[in-house]
Image 1: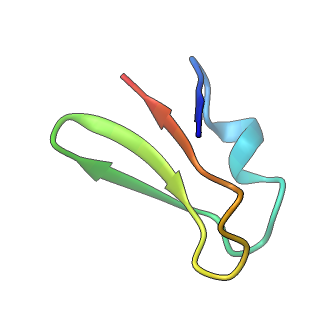
Image 2: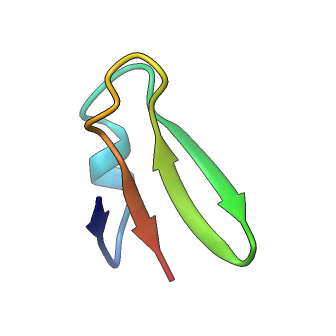
Image 3: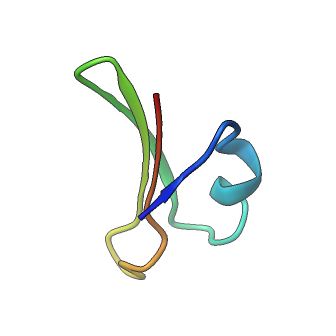
Length: 41
């Protein structure tokens, strides 16, 4: 998992990426390609 300041560029890497807010943190998750994971905050 990558920890980044900006998640917008990582979200565009795959069409199934989703931005999700959980417990005050922002995550990029992908159900089909599981390697696209990132966290902010």
